[in-house]
Length: 290
Image 1 (cartoon, rainbow, N blue to C red):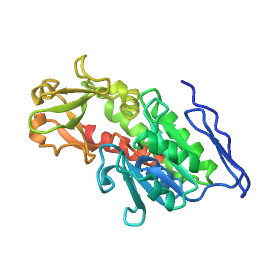
Image 2: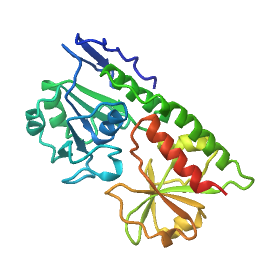
Image 3: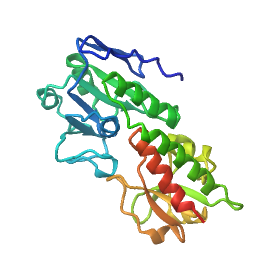
Image 4: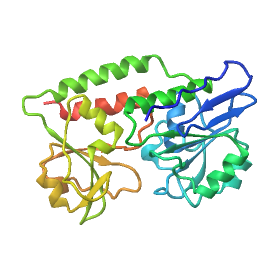
């Protein structure tokens, strides 16, 4: 699916428009400045110099924002409006936002907002939905957020481009070993079960593969994004490195459950910015270095 061409906003205070990944055109008489965003989107906008007035979480989140996926957001300074069914659209609207930014996973629905609540919000305030699902590459996701941020007057630190280029090269070098180490991405589900990520389903994991990282794929069957199995299955894949889901909905991981593998935290909902992706690639490169 080709991303819609964004309609850029003027640099002044005139009319603002943006076409999101549903093909929906949002408009406002002036460029929005009071943004409420899904937590991943809010962290991304911050990396472009735009501080949201508030954020909301996913159906997996609770009464507080998930620190693992909030990026550099100062959570004591940004309002949290809940997650999923607990998100109260009236409370959100009472904060007088002039834009709501959500994500989707390949469909038209705003993730983390009940459909009825999303419909009500969109009747009151522009709602932009960007696709972060498996149909998009990491570069495509990042560039769509960059386009939205630019329309809002934001820009990423120019140094982030050089940092990302350098991180890619370090990871490519670390992955280019005679016997490439295997990398397994997983989300702990307790003492008896683990969710093993299917690499093709995650833009960030596909980006690792494109840079030469040997990702371990669980056997076919089960879900499209995860294979839920016992820990013995994970160990049988003989990973050298385990990327462990660090989000609050994942169970704590006992490193002994993945044998001799080194374990580093993994956020499947990284901020979609050059700076955040550079940090991710650098972390994996350091873990793979001989």
